[in-house]
Length: 167
Ligand code: GNR
Ligand code: NI
Image (cartoon, rainbow, N blue to C red):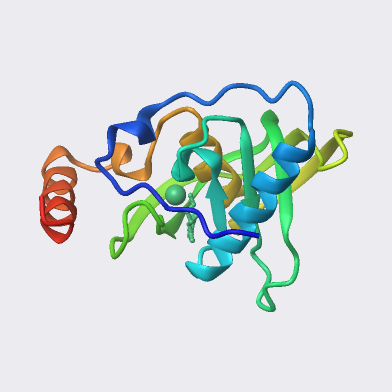
């Protein structure tokens, strides 16, 4: 296991579009385990490979209170929006530390993905689980929660995070 370094907005590498995983081999398994360790240590409930500068379609999450229900989703796809009515959630991001934004997203979606054994699965995700999966899938496409807020707010966040980095 190893802790990975998380890229911070506005690092341009966060804009990379991740590639489909062709084979779930040992390197993907190790990546997923290291991502889970990194997510737990950062007190996050989700993490996309993009955030650790690996541009493959792998996300990990754990929305349980007890932090013992890890999920690894490879090549996740939304195959159906079950409830298109959008709900507001307060979202945080390990790549935008210290900032929270109220975003609206569909609150019920059906996902297909490969599990850690390379087997195809379906998952019906509601509420927080649905929101986190959509947040992580955005990362895989180089999108971030700051893209949904006003330019002025995004610019304020960009300046504060650059300053915090000493840039
Ligand atoms: O830790 C996280 N919390 C969170 C809260 C609401 C909606 C999405 C998230 S994901 C975030 C971790 C992260 O940055 N994942 O990319
Ligand atoms: Ni994030």
